[in-house]
Image (cartoon, rainbow, N blue to C red):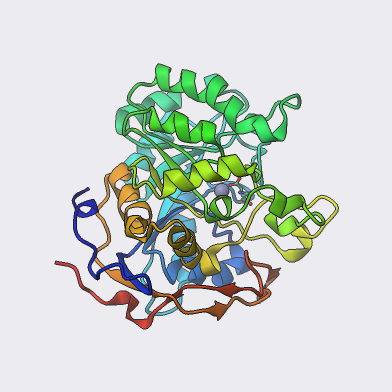
Length: 364
Ligand code: NCD
Ligand code: ZN
């Protein structure tokens, strides 16, 4: 926590900002031949990332997590430093001993709860939270955080209400039943979530994506359906975006950076039933910086991006720094590798650039 009080290493002049190197506390890196296209985009600016386990089939065991970690590291360009923090995918039948093994492994930093059917590759997720109470008790005892996709899936609940209903029906009782369990409400999208999280102790945190800070639901629906802005939880109305902006730029330690960068092949997005997920990694940090600059809150970017996450997880802050300059560049319209992937803000100009001095060691 100490560095949140430290002065920024370079005065936060509006044209140039130097921050402790950030981490991404929620990312999808995929697998197979997609890895080599996706991993460098995250590793170029984040020292660590919490890697989501929703592969097909999902990462359910420590052995699978360790093998996946090796594949991620093998996809890193030579000389690029990056630490993947692994997660396990919780199912109705996850055994408590797997949780013990995860904790002992030193590789697994969280357990991901997907309500079955809530989102991409969640069909093996939890069908009823009571079915995993034994496992949650083990996590509470060991201090292993539970990472929540916080949406209910009941057909009768409107998709725009699914996060708020989750908080009432699932999260409130969960926190009562497990008073010491560490919980992250991932990719929050509503004022309800902001208010709820602010009312909790430090054992509850929340990640906020850059796309939920940049866009409201008009960006998905006005002037035609824009599948590259479709993600889950779905974009909400403007008042909710304003609440997220206030939370992220407040410096409050409950809130930290998690891109939820979730690449899909172009054909799977541009389809009659397009899949959920926004690929933000290629300009993620630059876009967060744009958001903080727009709120005159560049002096709070470091807390959100680089300090609050490690404090929540009890991990050390990164010792390297990186510099961002207010200098425009244009993001490619698409990335072609094993698949063509369209990024957030494809073909548009990005206002901030990470400069060459990124690995300059200025600390202590
Ligand atoms: C994610 C994905 O594609 O894996 N999609 C998304 O819209 N965010 C899954 C998830 O985090 O919900
Ligand atoms: Zn996600």
